[in-house]
Image 1 (spheres, rainbow, N blue to C red):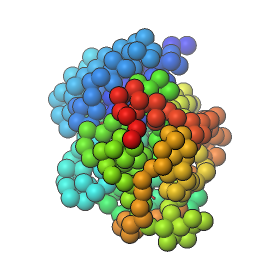
Image 2: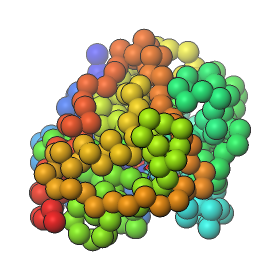
Image 3: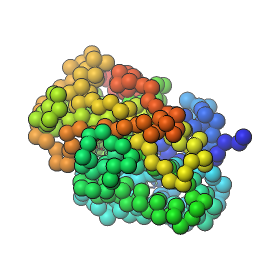
Image 4: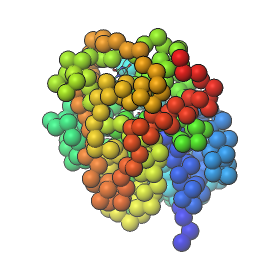
Length: 341
Ligand code: NAD
Ligand code: UD1
């Protein structure tokens, strides 16, 4: 049977580019739309080097409804994976309207085009952040969401989930898969794709990479007085290639399952910030400079996925380890010409 033609919005970004590779390798036809705000066009060259296929690319901003409509008029897509958006938590507090405009306004434009051009399947990049402050550190999909969300970024993810549910109610043909990512890290084993934010990094691993490169003198660990075994916060770090494969599984299943599906994509195993520092130091042979500073506002002590629903429904689970993620991150840095200090 012919495989779906898939449009990836935000497909030159960190998670989108890895997903493009896995989809192409699984036999899907992939096209990419991105405004290159937080990614580079060289991602396309690298996807081509890895897969031998250069996806068709549209340099389009999802806020531009007319330009989006032209893409859909040409594309004849079966499924959309919607990665495009802004994701810097602190910036979302400073510029909430920009976040609502890009993330929510952009999604509405996309959904309007999908309706206009009869595209009925969407997979959305949501986040563990929608769980807010859950009663249990192990998140299952049916926990309440949207409570005590700490910032506008998190609220955009929650609101978009609700918008997608409303569109599904209004149109019985519409199929929605919501993927709640935990903490994506790592890089493609080729060293050609990885996380390379255009702006100042906010998340742990991009900061660790900058410390390793000597661009930031030391990692500030946000608190060691949490109620965890070593006092530092625990998160569920998932290798981006495992995450990308989760998208392939979601594309494969979306036509056959109930109208709205929600899956946690995580490993089910939590690691502390100190364990991440140790894993990086072990892989690189360098003692990563770090110091303990005060807690960061909005951080939870521990958050981890229960990924059993994804395993049961999608036949997907993570395969790669934290050591794989560190090895691949170092290989990516080396291929970028970064010298570990
Ligand atoms: P990324 O910034 O690398 O990728 C997002 C892509 O969207 C970028 O290539 C960027 O240029 C593009 N983009 C931004 N605004 C756009 C616009 N107006 N029009 C068109 N394209 C636009 O981020 P990522 O880590 O690959 O994240 C992908 C998605 O997953 C995002 O929606 C993000 O919120 C979500 N997510 C990421 C994480 C994470 O830790 N990386 C965790 C949970 C959810
Ligand atoms: C953060 C966001 C979350 C968002 C996710 C992906 C907050 C509170 N949460 O999740 O909404 O979905 O990124 O973009 O911002 N850490 C340090 N020092 C650093 C950076 C991080 O100690 O310089 C620690 C943090 O305290 C945390 C862990 O590392 O315990 C992971 O942090 P981060 O990568 O920012 O991810 P989250 O906080 O899980």
